[in-house]
Length: 340
Ligand code: DAH
Image (cartoon, rainbow, N blue to C red):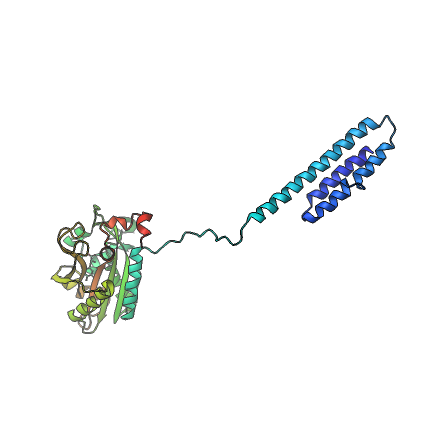
């Protein structure tokens, strides 16, 4: 009988382990613990035992009964907690909303400008941020001895040739020559992107900022095409009358070259840290493409001419949203970024 009892205990536990439906729990309980169940059957057998066997078997019988009851208790509890938690779950509650990021103000303005230029038949191109000295300087008529290199000091990168080092591009202008080489003429293209300078940072200087280069090359392109396109551009950006001034400006890759300034939006022209107390902000250097640049791009300057501009995208965004410190753009401060 001892064996029988032990076997019974194992069977009951085994059966409970494989139980998945709560409804089956009651059936098994009756089978083992019920009035006519297996334990009750054992009880009957126990009573027929000889007196000498009783203490030992009686103790075991008790033990088995307690074990089986305990196992039932345990499994009943686990079923209960499962039902309680699903009963407490309100399926109509709104879910936890994943946090949604938003688009960086620079990218927002960049996309708007891309649309504007696409509507005027421009290609939107992307260029390498690690550029060669050739495209960044040489091809743009800035040889190594040229003083213009000093104002565009940058970070040099390992690799490249000793006479054509690799660097972080200082402007988007290298794409003028790359685009001409790749697509030929006639060409209308804009190139938005990040550029880098070895700068001491302050409210209006960063080591990394955004520009958008523009290039149009075709037959008989003149300054009037340039001015008309710039006007269209500024109206598209500011949706209002913007006070501008055009000054002669020197860039080795344009001839003639201009500086287009806009009246400072931050201070309204009275002078602040962004406009360096000048009341005007340099926004759009531009000019007619230098013949040497056309030649570097494989284009005959006697047949074709063009204009180019280098829009200061970071500055433009600052004017548009009245941001008074350029360092906020790359600062990664969510309190700032969430406002856009
Ligand atoms: N690449 C120049 C800079 O970053 C800006 C520039 C000036 C671009 C004149 C042009 C241009 O396309 O025509 O300082």
